[in-house]
Image 1 (cartoon, rainbow over the protein chains, first blue to last red):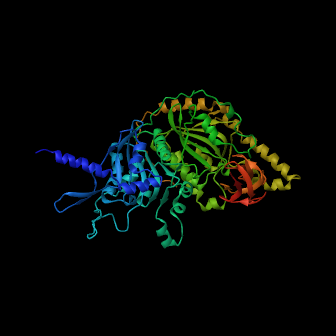
Image 2 (image 1 turned 30 degrees about the vertical axis):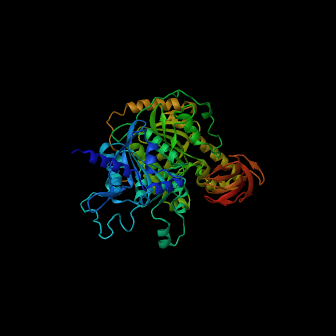
Image 3 (image 1 turned 60 degrees about the vertical axis):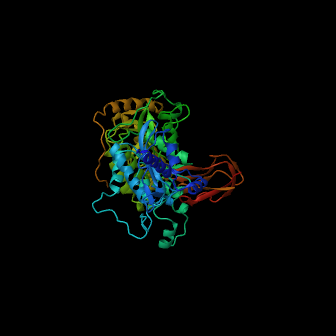
Amino acid sequence: MSWDADIDEINRRRELAKQQGGKDAVARHHEKGRLTIRERIDTLLDANSFNEVGEGAGVPEYDDNGQLTDFQPANFVLGFGEINGRPVIVGGEDFTLKGGSPNPAGLRKSVYAEQLALQFKVPLIRLHEGGGGSVGGTGQEKKRRSLGEPVFSTSRFVPLAETLGHVPVATAALGPVAGLPAARLVASHFSVMTENAAVLIAGPQVVKRALGHDLTKEELGGPQVHLKSGAIDNLAKDEEDALSQIARFLSYLPNNAWARAPRITCNDPVDRCEDTLANIVPTDRRQPFQMRKIIAHIVDHTADASSFFEISRKFGPSLITGLARLNGHSVGVIGNDCMFYAGAMTAAAAQKLRRFVDFCNSFHLPVLSFVDEPGFMIGLDSEAAGTIRHGTAAISAVLQSRVPWASVQVQKAFGVAAQAHFGPAPYVLSWPSAASGALPVEGGVAVAFAREIAAAPDPAARQRELEDMLAISQSPFPRAEGLSVHEIIDPRETRPKLVAWLELAQAAQTDPPKPFMTTMRP
Amino acid sequence: MKVTVTSEIAGQVWKVVASVGDALAEDDVIIILESMKMEIPILAPRAGKLATLHVSEEDMISEDQAVAELEVP
């Protein structure tokens, strides 16, 4: 007697697990231009680093003699692996089996993904393509009803929520994603979708029946909807791009909330002063400028690439958020984009800011803030969007921050919303183009001095005169005199100044890092 | 092929810079909006001939409104 037959059986089952939905289903999937979940995992991870969990889980069929006659693998593939030598947990639905709608073993494996990430404190990546439960349930037993979860079981949403405070979570939508997988998709710090992906609470047929709206799944939940809704952060041109964005996102982060992000070697001179920064902001305040170029000139870059990785560009576009490196340290970067409503804080921009600042706090990333804030967005649409509440929540998040914070006042810092750009005990640098106050002169003067302007012999000239007079009071020089800013600087000095500050600030982080907890916000 | 140029922001058309028939390079200015007291250019998303202008100076336009059509090769 020997175990050879059982060992052969193990190998046979491993072969069966890899058949996925069968040759035809895999071929159909490839015809749509999509990779299978196993190909996606292989593309994402370092070569030969995938260490699968639950490969033998599936739905078996036995004959009357108890011999296995068929085996449907779990339609969720899960395991450990490495990206650039760093550990991750990765999992995703197998769309070639039941369209990714979970079979019983698939459901168990998908729920286990979060638990493994929490237990081993490693980043979690979910690659989604699939539907949620079907009205017929997940059970294979057609004649008998399958038992539901017992009342004493822990809801799968407990670990789903907890992961966000403990480990980095990055997700991708690589095809249609609906129901529970869609909820798992957005329970992340970073999400990316391909051009042909769709993210849906419910699909077109359900929507048609309930609401009478006749829409395709792309119209309902394509990138043009969800990059602007804020449900998904970034667009990828194809699957490889999506996977490489996930790898890049994770490269800036620690493995978990009990660690600090790895620092890399910086070959970009710390004393690099870019001449173009001196006059990049037009002296005419009506003329816009490109905040992304300013950011790119200041953070680390190599010969061919900036370290700036933008997140969520289309949602709340008046505010720019992203990750970068400064002297090899990972940092969070925020900045106003005056091309959108002069950079005003909309309800969407406020939600984006709050989420981003909480994310930076969760993983102890210092924040660099490039300020050009005219105030909360005004007007009926803005009022109706509840901007004042979302904006005040964002300010609260900023001021509850516990990470080092530096603010470079590039131009405007007006109104209540200006507070959203200066964390507690910030290091504040001011460019000569900075202007601060309760209201920008262009709008404020016309309102505050309406009578005086109207009574003047030449109202337009009087308004200009008043605006010029008040513009002087909004200049950065009096603020420097009063130590209301640390320094007023030549814009070219920004990088060396920030690097010197960051070295001191990072060295002062002597408490061991731990998960970030916060209070309720407005 | 025609490409529709839309405005990502609401505002008032302050200046129409390009004319119908102009051959535009990518990022050439088509119109300038005044929005929140700033002059925000709307640029050609790619090179092409300006086939149609949907707006004139002083028009109020809303977010995602089509402002022009480009004929691209």
